[in-house]
Length: 302
Image 1 (tube, rainbow, N blue to C red):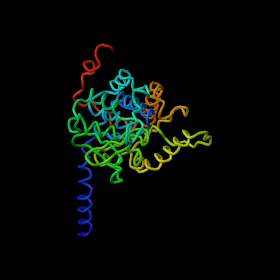
Image 2 (cartoon, one colour):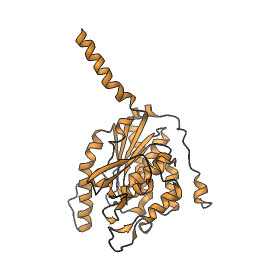
Image 3 (cartoon, rainbow, N blue to C red):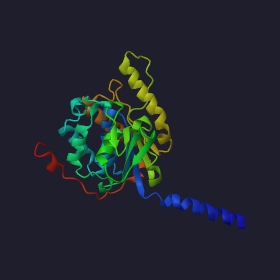
Image 4 (cartoon, one colour):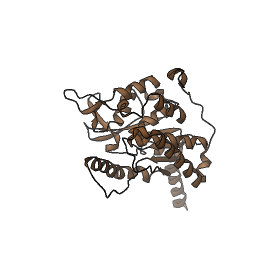
């Protein structure tokens, strides 16, 4: 009997810290995917309409870009309005070819940094409305890094979305960083212990391609295979995974198709919630967060 009591007490002591360490009801993890990441906005809107509000969020690459706006207090519709107003659907407004001496990529991050500075004027994770984890690959150490506190918020989000070879590596302190998707395209790890339910969104699920025609096809497939494998741990630890299967003719550079991609995310999100009614038990009242006044930032053009 003493052994049984001792075992029960030990089990209770082991489980209790884990339960108490989950201060948030819902966490959302957003994958990388370039332009396909516009689907994240649609999925977040579908969750919002069902009363499901993430209290902690993580993201890689485009998932980090969408995630940081959401963590700053912008609603999914606000984020879509920012995309439209800043014309982030134009490749020329995302990729600015600027090849200088000792350049580490074809484009710098000035366009993205300017948008982030305009709508998120503070440069500190701790000033966000909710916990947010960005994910970037540290080329100097060879390790993945998750960041949720401190300064350099904008630079770290830019680093998280710095596709190697296309964008310059971002230097922070003495280290160089590139896209988090190189090592982890679905960074669920840092928020899994923090939330009771974890919803992950994968916007670039792997699909076999038997018709490789050119270098571009090879590069796309390499990225898909890489993402498929390094996303597996995040998928495994998620309670729900929403796969956004988008028109195969669209890819990570299909920025001009942002509306179609957004609605694909929205419709698939709505369908997923309908197919998983148990998700609705996590519906809550809208949390009280400081929502930025978008019209003061955008002006009277809306």
